[in-house]
Image 1 (cartoon, one colour):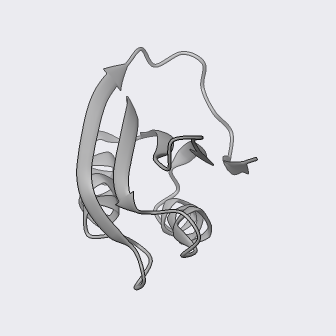
Image 2 (cartoon, helix red, strand yellow):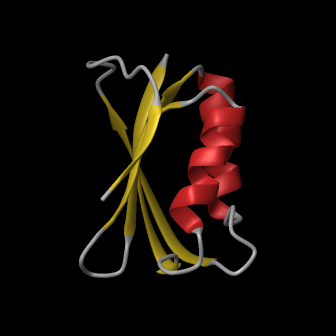
Image 3 (tube, helix red, strand yellow):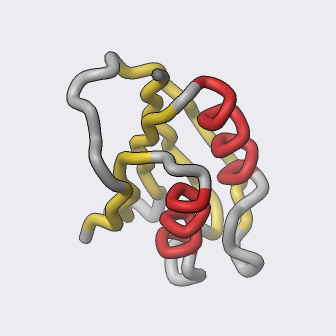
Length: 91
């Protein structure tokens, strides 16, 4: 099990980025959350098997939204606690 915090910058707000990130996470059975930040970034916490998380990170880097554009992405490892049970869009 791997848990990561992903901070994404670019055209990632107002383009369906959070919703499509949730769909991608649900499809891969990744748990965690996604939320907009006041500075225009998006923060994602993702938890799942190592290989699935690696694929999810690539999906986010490519932008799950056709209208989005990721200019910068920073990934930090997190301890595996708590165990998330679903993937949620936070407001």
